[in-house]
Amino acid sequence: MSLALRLLGTSASRPTVERNVASLALTREGETMLFDCGEGTQRQMMRYHVSFALGDIFFTHFHADHLIGVIGLLRTMALQGREEPLRLWGPRGGTRVLRAAASFGADRPTFPVEVAELEPGQRVERGGYQIVPFAVDHGGPPSFGYALVEAERKGRFNPERARELGIPEGPLWGRIHRGLAVTLDDGRTIEPGDLVGPPRPGRRVVVTGDTRPCDATVAAAAQADLLVHEATFGDEEAERAIQTGHSTAREAAGVAKEAGVRRLVLTHFSARYSRDASELEREARTVFDAVVVGKDGMEIEVPFADAGL
Ligand SMILES: [Zn+2]
Ligand SMILES: [Zn+2]
Image (cartoon, rainbow, N blue to C red; front, side, top):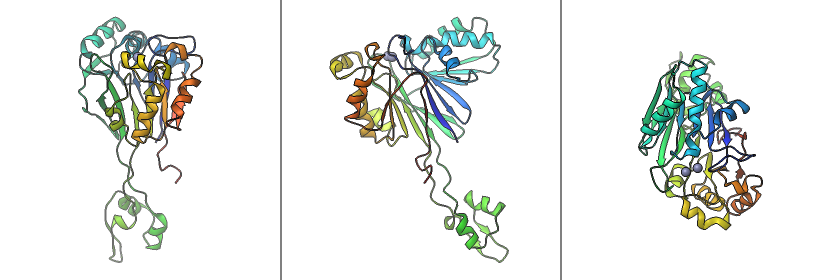
């Protein structure tokens, strides 16, 4: 079951030569969704081979550097004759903004654009996973982070034990693995607990959008496999981070540490760090070791925590 994230833009506020503005794609088992859609996102998608056949765009908030790429993207989709609906999600206040963007983009619409406002904690249920928005602290109008939370997986089936017990390989193994007791020809009843381990957690990926370090992110990212946290500034601009509702790299690392995540990816860098973000990496690493400074085009696979065990 594949799950991978592709960073499409890692610059804050405006694009630079090296970095485009905010957007990232998550692809799970061939299904793609975007989180934010800054100016120029569609071109980044082409560059980095992200499918246009996506069904959902989740907006963290409606600052222009996270939003206005949707106009061009919708227009291209209409020119391509897309027919499948596209769903746009965001915090309260989003309907007006997203409707306006959609009317610019798909001025001759070939496909329905569905717009929905979410409340914090309101889950978007999908087969095998859900998207859960949570309120972050960016000042001003409501801003979200999002958690992709996979459903629990079945426990591991123990084939050696099944053979020991003389259970014939085939459909019976499948029934037991699905949690059903089976009765063998010789009259013995086998309970699934004899052969199947406890259910195993699915994966959890958390994207913060723009925010100060906050408890809601720590809670949403508890034991997450991957946290993508904004890190607009370095230590020297810690004061500015407070004033503008952003985080420093060190603060992002503090959130990752407190939440006990497996990996942290930093993104949304102020233009002054565009060419060289090594200072941010250094500052973050003093707090949390498993940190990566994001780059446009970077792909990060998210394996199960127990993969290879
Ligand atoms: Zn931003
Ligand atoms: Zn913002």
